[in-house]
Amino acid sequence: YVISENIEHLTGSWAIPEGANTAGLALMPGAVLKIADGKTATLTRLDIQGSPERNAYITSLHDDQAGGDTDGETLAPPPGDWGYITENRGDAANNSRYGVVRYGGGTLGGGSTTSTHMLGICAGDVSLEHMAFSDSSPMFAGAMVMAAGEVNISECVFLRNIHSDYIASGL
Image (cartoon, rainbow, N blue to C red; front, side, top):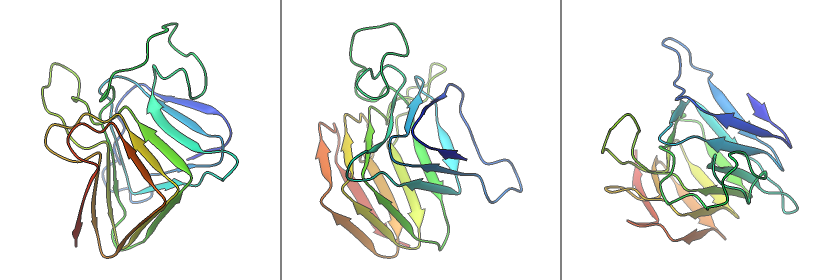
């Protein structure tokens, strides 16, 4: 599924259907994915491909700074407003650039007190360039957790993440 220069809302959790191996999401320049409180997504592919002129965003449904006001509220969302996105790519590489991921890593909703990472990437190799990760609220993991062969983080910014910025480990 490709989001190009528009706003999409994830209001229910999304997981790869059993037996499927191609459930992917691509965010192109100017794309905004707004995620509702406690919601999650598990994908086989997540490609964040913003540009120097227009970032791609993954943020809270309550974030008025990305994509405008979608909830009628004027307050900024709290850290950890939505759950997580996990990518299980296998041996393929993840090369994401010019994206902003914020306000995730919160509890999983439905009365749960479990908190997790904001973005989890399991891939052969990971290369992140010109990305910003902020305002996560995981209790036990970093804003981003990576299990990968080689990890390259270049010109990325980590701000206001409550536990840690990232945790990386080899496969």
